[in-house]
Image (tube, rainbow, N blue to C red; front, side, top):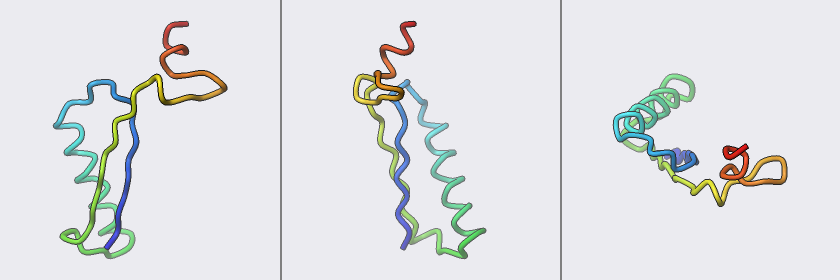
Length: 65
């Protein structure tokens, strides 16, 4: 029973793109690991850009540059 957690910034990713991510990751686990898609869990967490950092600064700050 695989569990995949995808974390993305909350940049208003539309529901269709999220559905495609879930479908694609599920299919990848079926194809590569022969997992049952009905027992594969995919969760998408959207993280505020103030709470996501790289290179010592937030994504919000980097995007303002």
